[in-house]
Every structure is written in C-alpha cells, then in structure tokens.
Amino acid sequence: MIGFFEHQYLSFKKKHLRNLVALANADGELHNNERALIYRLGDKYGLKEKQVTKIIESNKEQELYVPERDDEKMNQLFDLLQMVYADGVVDDNEVTFCKDVVEKFGYKEALVDKLIELFKTGDPVPADWENVKLQLIQDYS
Image 1 (cartoon, one colour):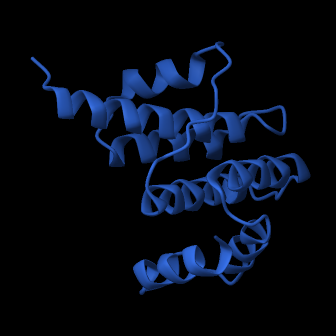
Image 2 (cartoon, rainbow, N blue to C red):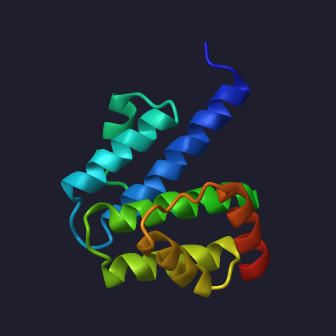
C-alpha cells in the first residue's frame, strides 16, 4: 500500500514529466532523443517504465504544473532546457514554451535566455549548480 507522502511524491514527479512531454511536443514531434530523455528522467525520479509510457501516450491536454518551491521550479526549468537541447535543435516554439513556463513560475522571461546561454557553454550542470540556482532565483525573481 502506498502512503500519503509517497503518493504526493509520485504525483509531483508525474506532473513534472507531463510538463516535459508538453515541451517535447511543442515543435509538433516527439523525437527519439526527447523520448529517451523522458524515460531517463522518469527512471531517475523512481517512475516505472509503464508509468512513463502512459504519460507520453496520454492524449489528454494537461494543465501546466507549477511547483510550489523555487528549488523545484529551477529543477523543472533545468529539465525543460535539457529537453530543448535533446534533439539538437533549439526550436522557437520550445523557447516560447519555456518563456511561458518561466512567466507562470513567477520569474522574469530573461531567465530562459540565461539558461540557454548556460547550456550552450557545454556542460549544463555547473559543479556548483545549487549556488547557481540560488543566484538565478535572486536575479530573475
């Protein structure tokens, strides 16, 4: 039997992945690299393959999930940017989607440009990512 907090955590991660699937579909096509990233992140978050498949194959239009905490928002944005770069093409629809997300998360739109800049430099995960997140939250709130 699954406990309340386990259910909450599972629900949070499913909503997180639904946001990623929505972004992956923003350019009209779910590419193999994007699909692979969704499965990899699902596994990282403890979801079973069949749960991830169900999320990907769902035809229901999902409302954007907005995490409560800044830390969770930044982690979601980080994963969204991974998705933008997953197929090797930074599509304008994907960037627009990210800017909409940033606005709904309560941050300045310029945060997307800053994250894209960070990802262009190669390794998108600086060794001090926790400090980078804190600085981004401070600069773009």
